[in-house]
Image (cartoon, rainbow, N blue to C red):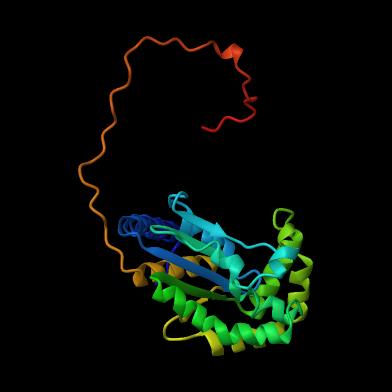
Length: 261
């Protein structure tokens, strides 16, 4: 379906409203949802996540971007850092990159040993099956961007001071090792794209299309229902006790440099 910009905004708002209904159902049913967002640099993961969480209640939905492991964490079981962020009843956790770092950047850049990499590929399906056995819904998305589009986005980042921080030394190395990353992704899929925990690939050369397609798909595979909220909420009457506000001159007002009409 081809949409205009106005139609895109309207459809995005409709889908975001359904995400709110989905969250209400998860809370009411005490269900747990984990969504992984993976893909090449510049694939649009941040933009998709922002649209997913735009209207969700942050008390029961959080985004996790696990940082570089500390010295102590390097001596832990690899999955331990991620298990600590798994949801409780009625919660949603969105991983902006996940335990699949080991199959991608850690492997390609030599941040883990070959033995650690092989053990990850062997054990990961069992780990994800254990999550499912415990009742956690796990959804894995790979945002796919073409070589040409990634190159265009990299160049745009370099010229835009608002986005230059996104272009790290690791990103530069990723560009140089494009084939290495492609081969690592293919092998990762071969080992971890299972019937019990499949990878869903989202074509992301068009960011807006990717956002709509991913959110629509997520809504289609979570078996949520609209929760009956009971009687409509009503505002309670405001107190009638007399109150006089202090004069404005007693407050530290922010200068009104702008006035939007």
